Image (cartoon, rainbow, N blue to C red; front, side, top):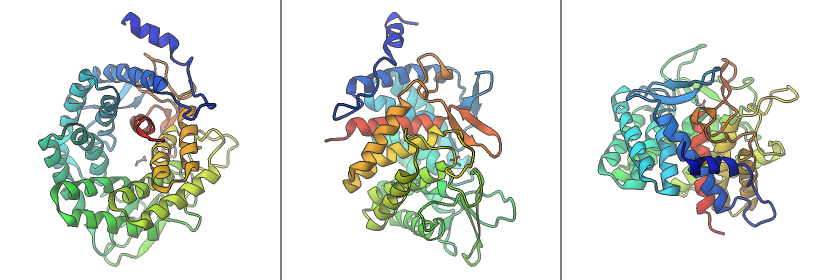
Length: 389
Ligand code: GLY
């Protein structure tokens, strides 16, 4: 390891948020974190093949990879693009492009709604950074593929093709995130139909997925012939009637994103209603319990939900002018920047954040690093850095 990097290791963690300044996270601190992130991600890159992506850590601390079809495959290249956006390192942009291009085959392989996450986080950021024409073509082709999953009788895109527990047409709140590929695809191709599919899905979800208090169900099961709602349930949360934290985070981010992409006031109102609900329920340090309704005294925290919320809250503060959203994002980021959540350089298998919860009811990825926690953490830090005011 280079001497200057060891020096950095020594000073990291000594500087943290300064709540007495207008911006609690200084540019110097951001720079330390992005330098550390580059080293961590180079470490991860070296352990991959042409057909694998990082997923999490095994119990023995070794890297667990996924195949390219896993819903998270776009987050690793996407994180590299954010690291590049901050620091402009050629090393990281070369790696980011290589990792992004591995995903082109998803245009043939993918069979669910997650092509939105997979291609928009990788190719979407690659196109934003480079303007590369091939990236644009992949994004438009991916959007067309995703749009084919819309069934006009339901007014929503089908999330999964597999069926459990009597499902006929399952749609999860996570699907709000995949709509960005459609709006990007519409913009890049001029095909307004893609944008219409995104709006239709967002409107139907607003009608059927939310409780009166603006918490969201995880899964709504539709009748594909009539569009009738057959059941509302959870898959990854504590109970059918509970508020699974990451689902709430996807909802907040999804409607804020749809407002940015369409300018439709109803999406801003929905995002603010969800945001206000979250402000009233988040713990003092801003990091949500994995499910808001887990009755245990001290349930596990889910840093991935915190990172998604922080990124969304920064954008929502800019969209609404309401600085309470900014304050919450800053608090969440400050907590994530403490050693409790942020890895020290050279540890955590190359991942940045600790304490993510993937799927607790199935005992899968519990209290571990997760690629999407890192991705939205880096996105939030870039948004924080670019924020004017
Ligand atoms: N299915 C995406 C998630 O676990 O949030």
